Length: 415
Image (cartoon, rainbow, N blue to C red; front, side, top):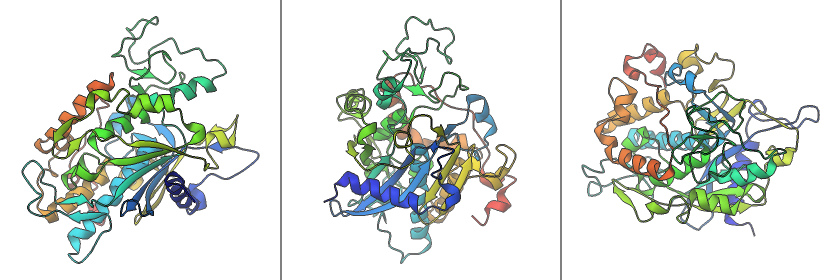
């Protein structure tokens, strides 16, 4: 009989198999490529085995720090598979909210409207995930960063750590202070701290935090993006399970990165109000392999620069450089924007918020939404967790105008 983790992995792999050919890698002996795959599976009626794959992403690229101000909300900062899958989940849930708002007879298996008794000034969201729904996460590779440091060390022909700190040039190479932001292989001896992407020393630096760190913080902030929390309460929106292949799993690293006995220990029992709390997920393993994982493809394989995105009910996108394939990265405007970009997620939230009479989704600038009063409790939870994780540096710089004020608004009106 299939285990829980096997069913979760199979649901994501089946969704990948169904993607169109242009969004998938091809098995070719002359040009072997690999790519990470992540996906989100929702389980209805806890323990019944009713699994629905709702979003997936493949990819391993992100914007360098100097390109962030050019994104304008329409270029994805981080196209690592884990991040795309989480943004895809949010897109799916927002579409469910949109359907509930537009049609009073529509019934979602995953989202319900909250009663007046549940809504308060501190928790004003009109929607919540149903109590019988569990959120499961799958990844074909160990998340980059702290949860994969032991695996990274073991895989190196030359295990010598890097001896420079690219983002902190004043630091000395002999010791790395706990608050230093580390990249990839920098300071193997420094574990349980924040690291950035990419992992290679010869790559341009970024301020994009590792997927280990991003998954860790979601144990407090929930699986919801900031704009999504204007509509959906975070109370039931935490990952229950993270599934990794047995060959890409280090018990020591995952316990350190994610568990209540590792670096997250100071948050045990912590609640912040508005539904935010420390809600650790269980890490489980599967022997089912993704055919284009790094370990299956083997030594000498080349990492793919293409990302695939699929969201149930929305369709498939193929991305390069954070925009739709075939579009120029910073010159295509909304024509090149992914459905997962900040601009279009914000627009979707605004549409539903306007129909529901929810305040706080408008404003002239995206930054005003992120720093608004409605985000105060979430921001508190973030800051406390970032302090626990050690070395978190904000990846600011991508602020942009309201969709209603944007010159591309007419094109968005049919979104």
